[in-house]
Length: 233
Image (cartoon, rainbow, N blue to C red; front, side):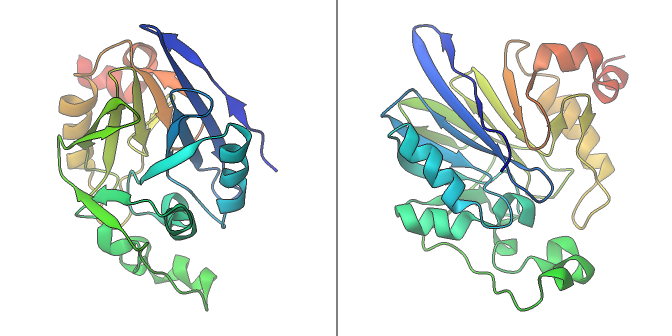
């Protein structure tokens, strides 16, 4: 069992409850975000293997009500548990239109060698899947959630700002690093453009919830992340 991290923050009188669970394979961060105990919540990037019961335990502990699941992109380590969670709570899953097809057909985004390790497994979409485009606004949790199309890691990679307070960065931005661009539909050129126009333009105050590793801030990454520093010159 991986450690569970609780990070309550207060801003403008708003308590935001953030719980993370690093999935056993690839240590992908699954985030559960709510305004506080007993409130509605969203689930972000439930990874692999099936971690649905672990996330259910977090939800039960805080008496939360899931209303949506957000996917930053279509890689299996971010989508593997989406169907049992979304269907189990009868909630929609949101993903960019470019990556949607890979929920049910992951071979095209990973290559057959990786998927061969999961021989015999079948993949399918949740019952309700909603496609997102750049700047789509989701009115969830009583907060403003904005989808930012951020290609480079995959063609359909997304980041999400939540209430101008949090940035869910997926595999675009990490603490001290960025996502790889050598996998199918990845592009170093598009990643550079994403970092210039979609990341460096963000507010320093944003708290960044990354797809892997520790959380960080835009301010810290602007000053210390070598990839951002190089582009800012």
